[in-house]
Length: 366
Ligand code: SF4
Image (cartoon, rainbow, N blue to C red; front, side, top):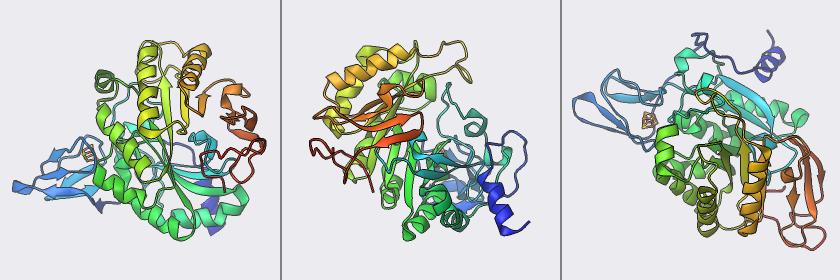
């Protein structure tokens, strides 16, 4: 197989799961952990702070204590590699119309009952079919395909990228040197120190704010709300372009008092310019007993957030061409970007401003 065929193979890779085949056993000593007595370690990468004895693996299934040292099992072995429209992340205010070279390894530090990628997120890297791609390989792929596919960025996505932290950091550091941007789509469950180090290389982030209720975070995802809110504040404070996704699930978080409290928090802590995406749920994984979210529910959530003064509110997983997918000027209300699903069909912005009234529009535009 020559280099071109090899690259084609990688680019066309789909999510391959559950075969029990791992093509490589890459491990890398973790960047954030403490050594304890009796060869135990405490992982300080995410708020779970797992304490692991020799031979034990963390809650995320991607970190292991080997003879008193903590190693990432998810380094250079992605199980998902795709080129996606940036709109699919979703990032609507970040270089619209470009694509992101998107990667994930197996594992996650949440247990979401509604996970759309549970075939890879709820596995260890030993249980998925993986590619062999070092950070350098990823960057070379992007450089090779950049022109042909209009790639602007590398996206760490699909599963929780915080659990392949070392792979993400090393890749993003290399990417930055070549002017390639780095995108983080995450559940926001990362400790502050690793997050601050990551923000040196990050250009954009979409964080899932799954619920605005501590109990639901515990029951549905086995996580906690407060660390996610801290992550949002840190990313914003560090100047990383930030968008927020809230998956609205019937009978779980389609309570409008909760949505109202969430929007109020976003507005007072992050400001009115943070784009919010209310996305429809479809039955999957452990929540196949629930119905899909009615389009009218996310429309109502969008109207509520706009009425509360948020400037950019979108709805997702709705029929393509819905007006709630478009970007409007918050001042003159004219259409700035018209979308059809993940496709940008019209972009009227001029130098990041509304061409009709000159209002600057929050985002990364060029
Ligand atoms: S990254 Fe994994 S091993 Fe580390 S604390 Fe979080 S769940 Fe535990």
